[in-house]
Length: 304
Image (cartoon, rainbow, N blue to C red; front, side, top):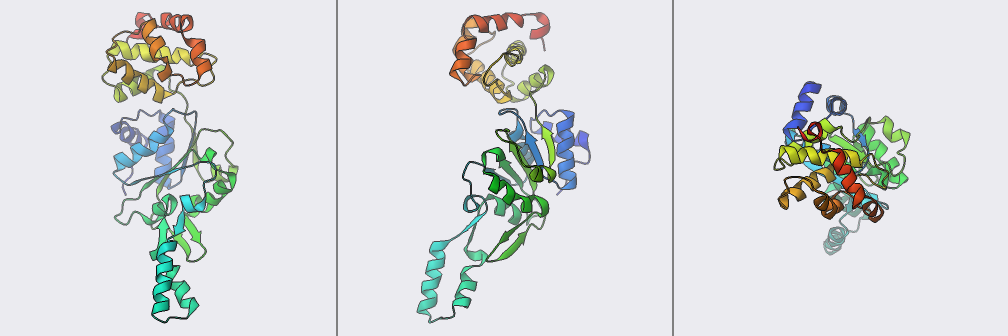
């Protein structure tokens, strides 16, 4: 597996997948790839954490494996489970053949042949062609703390222990990206095993570059207005300010309805693309949205 030789090449790799990364993020990605360490990305929802893993899989041309975390996630869903129906058939066949040795039967049915691999185990067993997979462990903060502790062996040694079989170790370490929206604090033991990076909201220049890459149909003037409005909106006291994902969605929506210039009526009717809470919508609709719109109506703000 050939990784970028330096930070600049890593920036270029991400850019080739339409991901406009700041230098510090490209540095973290480069170190994670070159040193074979997991990358932990924290930040608000919608700032592009998950997209890093997707872009790496696409630009490195390797398999993408995703584990979406949630409360109650267990080993059977994340790592492996036994194919009980096939095991029962094997036991019945052994009985028909007159095999009475329980040790032999157990040895046969508790083998990898009867193992159903889930995302974590899939990531360890992939890469036979020389291309390791990209494993995304998405929103680890939604999982329970005991599951977080279970991951420590995987993140340290890229191996997992299965009581009936033993230890399964990756022939080559997969690329591991872990994301967190920080709804709870991640344990230090997990953080120590990773390179850490906080993904923040982009500044105006980088967000405009992102919008040009992700929504090129939006004209220069409209893109400048969109970014200017969203940047101002993030300064307001809202329950949830819009992320980059919402900026891109808004641009696509405005292009779809043939908007060339932002007008107060257009902003009011499409504000639900940016804001996802009723209290925020009520606060910003009407006069407040028009006020923000007025603050970006200058040549310096609108121009690219």
